[in-house]
Amino acid sequence: METRILESVPCLPLFFCMFFVIYLIAYFIVFRSWSPKLRPEASSCSISFAHGTPAVFLASYAILAEPSRGFASSNSQFQNLVLDYSIAYFLMDLLHYVVFVPSDVLFIGHHLATLFVFITCRYLVSHGAFAILVLLILAEVTSFCQNAWTLANARKHDVVFAANLYDFLSPPFYVLYSIARGFVGPYFVYEMGLFYMSGKADNVIPKWVWVSWLFVVVTAISVSILWISNLWVELYRNRSGKLEKKMS
Figure (spheres, rainbow, N blue to C red):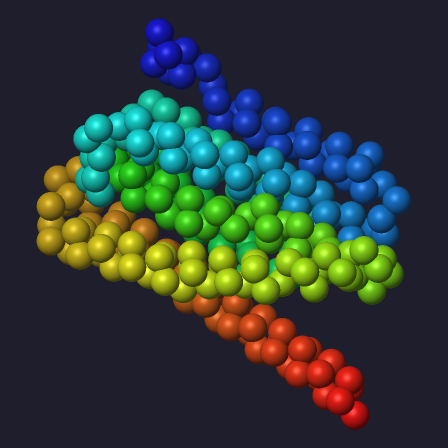
């Protein structure tokens, strides 16, 4: 019964409409008092809140519910549902960047590359969701903290609570992000690469597809490591500067 329902309902358009409505509510109601410069970013964070943590739980269930899971295993219906959920989110957030921040080529490129991975896994090869969903979990496990940190960062100069929240969240967020993107992620991608390079998946996932996946993921992880490294340096400089002022 569950499988028939999932097959009959066009989940992707419904999910996209959901994220679109959340974005509109955030932009025109929740953050209506924010400056026009900050409202789009805050609205983007709102749909990220709606996607990130739920995606972690949905992807975890989709993986654990399948007894036969592996880098070359076929996608289950529920795994495809989770992929549709993430595809809808990235499409909506891509629309946000194209409309409000068209100069942010890095994020637009990131979203296009991510969509390529999700769409090929979901609609082209219908295999490999296990690997893609594990990567989704690692990418989104920090999402809630990151979005709260981003909103606090946006208002830290004019709201005392936002400044305090930003200072409070920065160290734990940086630690969690560093572990997920700097250690667990690279190790999983290493195992993923070893499996695909062995040729064990070539009969269900064409070589050009998994090579593309690895290229996108390795690039994304590399950029993430560079980003968090710069944030650690900035945090160290700020804390050192404050300490020097207190001692002088």
